Image (cartoon, rainbow, N blue to C red):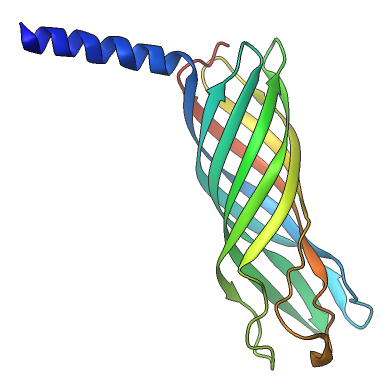
Length: 195
């Protein structure tokens, strides 16, 4: 009898919890570059990267939700100097917290802050010991479509707010540049997809 009571209580509480909650996974491609700073002596180009991770959605009514995410992201830029292209790759664990407004029919808009923690960097050999700072602050905004089956697609722009370079300007390159990322994602959510 106690086991039946416990099972019924567990099922009812999990159903109540699931009524206001979504869990999802996402992945996709992205185009990143450095903005600002002084790149007048080199040719700077965007670089293709990727992102992958998981997120939660806390439903705040029929249309509004709060969506914290954890994403592994490859960013950076392609710099052409002395006739050769070199990839400046930065790898982050990004934690965006997006406020999402979902329209009838599944289309949505989103906006929120993002904190990035540098996981590693892969930059060409240089006199600069550490190229990028360990913390990266950004703001993100995007649009997308989330179907009733749980499958969705999204596009997001992430604009860096904090300086990326972690070295002195006397090294010959201005460190006052920021990350800029355009993301295209595919995602899938569990629970409450029809809301």
